[in-house]
Length: 117
View 1 (cartoon, rainbow, N blue to C red):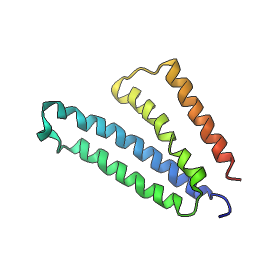
View 2: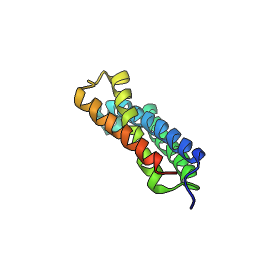
View 3: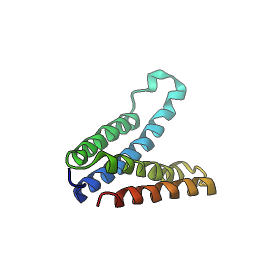
């Protein structure tokens, strides 16, 4: 294989975005579970599962022509987005330690992406 095409990187980034939103909906859908397992069937939980499955489709499409060693680490962008969504949707704290950790993830993704050349 001779490198990873840009379209594969874009598809994996789309997968990361969709997957991170899936985590938000899973959290929202898990909230009613505190009232019992009978609340497991709810729209938000189903949307979270659907988004995760949908993100897998984009990930698979990206992997078709790309290098796993480049694309798989790029999925970690979903962790960064997950932290942002947790602040936006749930008011979770965004500490200095989290900021530093997320910055290191992004720096790592950039370096791995540079390795595609």
